[in-house]
Image (cartoon, rainbow, N blue to C red; front, side, top):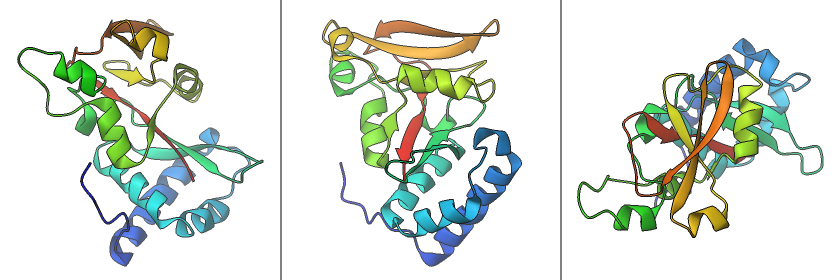
Length: 188
């Protein structure tokens, strides 16, 4: 991972906050009972998290608030783009999967990209919760956090929505497809 200054310029910060506020107001059903002013105050107090949200945004994730942890005070953001974020597709699941390929290795992996962005992959449960908020990944699919026991056997999990249902599947962690990316989660 390259050392990066994880702080946005004032101009980029203001631009991102406007984008997030507009999305927040447009999709109120995703975060009933949550006030933007409180979310913004929390974001402004955590500039590294704002940087991560910007990474989610510039890779096509369209992050939005989907919950509030009353114990920690954190707001939970998921990638809410209609399809798997375009800037994060064609990735193997992880480094080991990528290295196991004999040829045609992709440029990156889902787990490495997520770590570089400062986010985590959605779990299967989080992915299903996202699908309660709308219909996502109708044409694409998204890698999800894979339990160690599956990963130790060489597999990795991904999800999508087809035929009005949410499906969880498996593939070898070394596989990658132009229509498979990953969705991130960030708590601020």
